[in-house]
Length: 442
Ligand code: ADP
Ligand code: ASP
Ligand code: MG
Image 1 (tube, protein in one colour):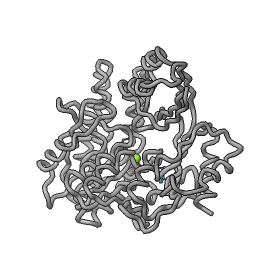
Image 2 (tube, helix red, strand yellow):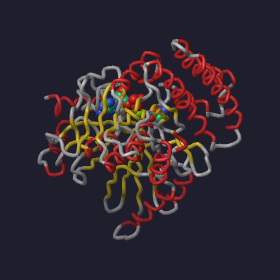
Image 3 (tube, helix red, strand yellow):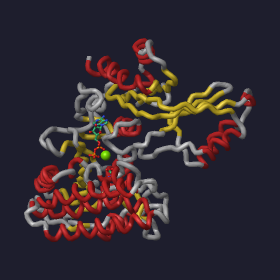
């Protein structure tokens, strides 16, 4: 059994949907298909959730969403029934906007319209390609806690629900990204969460393979949008791919690989517009283990420097600091300490699947026992590969290459799979290109 996930661009237009449908049609084992909202729609829905929008701005966004979906329907051979379903959803969306003003929980319900719309249309596209699927509401299976915007899935319940709804032999289509809590409220798994949904479903139904169909032919040596010379990696280990996704390789949601790894599910990443290209397979042991396999870049990182005059020979201070951060659900990326100060980096990028917000409450609480310095807009670069903590000369080479740049923080040694460092945001892309040329192209 194969679980196949198609991202936003792979279902973003009628032509894209047709490509994706022909991929599903080509392999009868593709039994559970998971899709995202059409590309741009989740961003539009998030924008609609902003209570400060003027009436005209709101209408503009709504019209854009409507047009995007109705244009696809117009091209269907038999779009009458879907047209009704989609128009109904669009009406519900408008009604829902009235409710949102009253209750913040409804934001997840709002963004869920993207996946609800795309799956309705794609069911018909699949039908016209000769694939009969049953449409499933992912909220019946993807059970989560009530942490809206970033819900935590409950695997045990998901397994039970999948056993109830997914029968062997049949083919299904469902939504990525969305779920529901025990009260039945709609929840979402964080931006880019469809990859994670598909992986959880793959684990739950004990699939043999998880396929991530996207707009690039696999996992590349770095983001091909930033470094045009980047090339696809045909085979990568779970550890390397997990590091890459955690450190900003947007091609996979950072939590995607855990469920697949736990469930012993093979993973393949490939392009839905060029399905004949090899793509990437993620394996437990790869044929080669280069010291540097890939590079990643994450923008809009915040550097927090915490200083306490009491820290000299103090114990318990770090524990207290991390406890405050934990109480506010703030996850920390890099840490570097000296006797009197600690520097931490936080992922404050708006696009982050787990965006960190330094609220005034956290700042006040921290300031009650330490001096704080908050600096914004850095880029975090990670070099990902193997045996990095035991390979002589990596830091030397790196520092030598970057001597013209200001490196604010370096983490090397704690992981065998990565070396990462923080630089000024405006230097990030240039450094990435430089490192790619030196460590990967040459
Ligand atoms: P989807 O909508 O299919 O989930 P995403 O936009 O979320 O697609 O992810 C695919 C994008 O990830 C690519 O278009 C590419 O620009 C970006 N990306 C970042 N890093 C990498 C990488 N190392 N390999 C491939 N793509 C990457
Ligand atoms: N549609 C959601 C988003 O744009 C989930 C996804 O695409 O994976 O974040
Ligand atoms: Mg994605």
